[in-house]
Length: 116
Image (cartoon, rainbow, N blue to C red; front, side, top):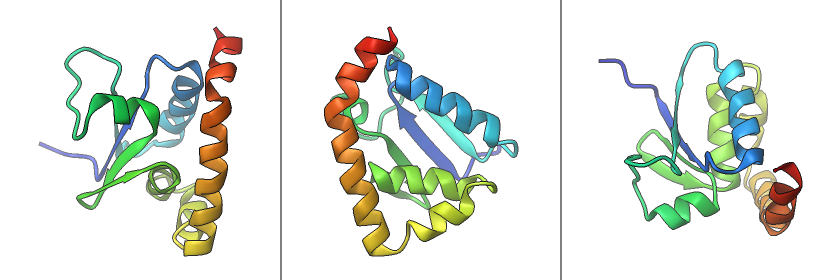
């Protein structure tokens, strides 16, 4: 049985998250990513469900990543976005992306309310 090289756990109850994942699914033409909706009943979770709902998580090469690092792993799995994912391996770039991601998480609830 084929297993995609990357697993991404996301909040399927979040309208922002579902839009982002829908775009990533369209770009993932080779089906290299296994997307798991953590909000779904019975979803297999490698960590506490609350943590997975709060931040994007991914498993790349057996390593569990979260936040900006998880986004960068997802980008690396998609040929069109791979250059961004590779640039994100530079520590200062990843740190800047994480800084931006944390700030986004602060406004995410308000954005979710606007999208519903």
